[in-house]
Amino acid sequence: MDQNPYKLFFVALFCLLILSPPVSCQLDYKFYDSTCPNLTYIVRKTVWSAIANDTRIAASLLRLHFHDCFVNGCDGSLLLDDTTTFTGEKNASPNKDSARGFEVIDTIKATLEKACPSTVSCADILTLVAREAVYLAGGQYFFWAVPLGRRDGTTASQSAANDQLPSPFEPLENITAKFTSKGLDIKDLVLLSGAHTIGFAQCFTFKPRLFDFAKSGKPDPTLDGSLLQKLQSVCPNQADSDTKLAPLDPVTSDKFDNSYYTNLVSNSGLLQSDQALMGNNKTASLVTYYSKFSYSFSRDFGASMVKMANIGVLTGQTGEIRKNCRVVN
Image (cartoon, rainbow, N blue to C red; front, side, top):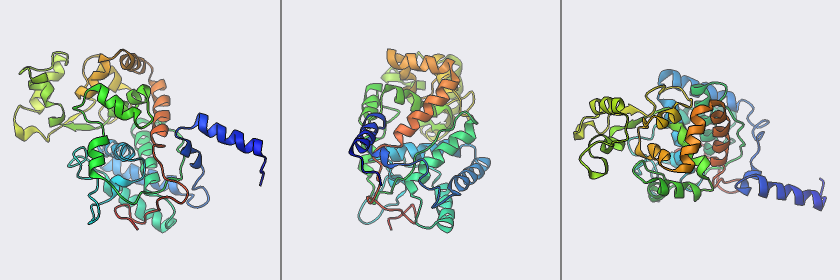
């Protein structure tokens, strides 16, 4: 082994300057090449089958990765069921009755345990599943290399999920603060928000914009009029409509593209937290840019996904490799 101190110094310096956070240097694009060579094939095949059965599942699987990484790091904690020693994250307010796709992760994990037992972490599965969901929903331009080697956490926290996950009811400055606390910046915020180009939202998450915006007793005056009428018919002003669904992107709800940004430019964002990106000069300029240049969005979205997937990862001897993603070994 080469112990040249100058070489070791520059390798360490490269990690500190180029990769964020520094622990990402312990991840490797070829981490499972010898120990589980069919990993990508198994993940892609299962995700493809799930999307063929339910197109909405692509957005749900992507959301699982977001909601895992934003709560104490990308450690698979979202997948853990409640136990006698901790209350997990599945029933936290941002996840209760909305987080879905756990059975897809279970299927992948069971297949991998037969192919390469106790090898692939649930955290890495979530990371790969998110990439494949976007790729299969958006085509060849939405694909990025994923460094692997994460290990699984051994606990979860409902309170942390309630506190750390961004909410559609929060002002932009609060959401921005949550992103920056994770080492992400304004550009990452705009790019990762672009995941709302697929998927659906429950009516209660945006209904105030339709009937009582800012306690005014009137709709949000900035919301496109034709979209307002459609949404009011889907989500009438009564409690039993709260759990009905509307597409986050009414133009191409099942296709991962840059329509999310063109919608915001035309005041057709569904969530107030999304439309708020047009009320800030920095975020608005990025939204406008990505609405015009779809290739730039596909390239930059992948970079921000890799950056998010590095949040608080466990590597080396920390954590464990769960045999069942729902329970600690």
